[in-house]
Structures are given as C-alpha cells and as structure tokens.
Length: 289
Image (cartoon, rainbow, N blue to C red; front, side, top):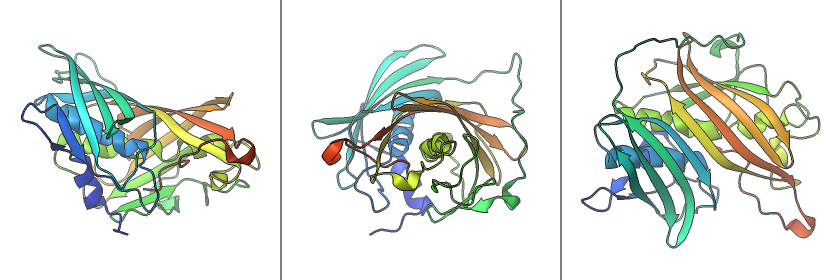
C-alpha cells in the first residue's frame, strides 16, 4: 500500500482537466488502506475543479452531498456545470462519478473578494489550553500533526463528555495556491464530527463502527472567510447540536492560534444500528486520513 502523505494528498486535490473547455476533470484517491474514499476528499477536489473551471475567482462556500460510496481503486471524474457567472459572483454544480455511478454532488459559490465595508473575524469560542497541552492523536498522514484537547482516545465509548471536540492541526507545508489551501481546510471537516456526536453518550463510540453501528457522512457544507491563510497550528472546533432519528448534526469553526476565524462548516451524518443479518450498509464513520 502506498504511504499516505501530505504531499500526495495535495496532489490528489489538484484534479487534472480532461477537456479544453475545463468542464471535466480527473482525480485519484487515497483510501488509507480502506475500500472507500473519504467524502471530504471529494469535496476538496470539487472545490479545485470549480476554481479551475471558473478561473480568477475565489471559492467562498460549497455544499456537498455524498450519495454513493466511491472506490479508491478507480479514478473519479468531476463534471463542472456553471449555473451563472456574473461580474462578481459565480456558481457551479460539480458532479463526482465513477463510470455511470454518481458518488457526490456539490454546489459551489465563487466571487471576486472585495474591500471590507465592515469586518469582524475574532472568534470568541470556549477557551482551550492550546496544542502544547493537547493529546497527540493518530490519523496516518505523514506531514501532519494532530492533537486533541482533553481527550486521550476520541473513539473510546467509555471516554464520555460534552458533545464537543477541539482538534489542533499542523502541516509541514501549506500550499501557496489559494484553491489548494481551501481544499486542505475542507479535507479535515469530515474527520471528527461523528465522534463529537457520540462522545456525549455512554457506551457509544467510533470504535464500534462496522460492528454494532452503521455510520456515514451524508453531507458537508463549508464557508471560507478571507483570507484563508495561517501559520503553524489551526484549530477545528466541533459542536454537535443534535442527534436523533438516525441522523446527527455538527457545526464547526476553523480558527488560527491567534483566534482569527478562517472557515465555518456543518456536517450531516447517519448513525444507526445494524439491521438483522447486517442489512444496513455502512461506510467509514470518519476519515482516517
């Protein structure tokens, strides 16, 4: 198995055009040893595809739905369909597919960023001790460090607490291109949200995925707040506000060490018990990349 590295993941985000009109793109995947592709990888690739199809504009938000599992053994094709390209704003839909199978759809909003009329971007969320005091966590991607506040094992069903997780990330290198930086920020939005929801419930944890629980990320929405730039560590704050009827909802913010808000996101996910004889179909509870 090819080692999962930051350099390889950024190259995967950078989808290649298949036609001169820049409406179709090809992308590979890194399943990290699993047989399915992380939805937030497809989201990241969709952002880059839309940026290339509508050059000179900046991605401001994207809403993705993951409708079928994608195999890492097959290439993905991204079809970009512009909805409107005005003087300032543009929008497009992106369909990710493998052969005749649609795996995900995304709606992307882009614009030409303008000077501030008003601004506030200091996030006054719950206080944290910072990355130095957080516990190292293992998600195999060489070139990235991950630490989690106050939680030794986020997948342990016996480690119970409020439905909130603060994760600190540090990358060995951050892309110079703006579209790839936004793709990198989007990539981690799918990793810890289901774990955040489960944390408040004794006896329920991500280690049970595929054994007693059927789980899947169904949709991610991400909004970027200019400028999407940072040095050193960035913090992903996850807050689960609802779980019930087999679905969970988590909202999150991406914040610099200095407290500047660079992105916000939400996630809808499925958390259900397996049907008798394993009838429920499950995809990975969270990305392990």
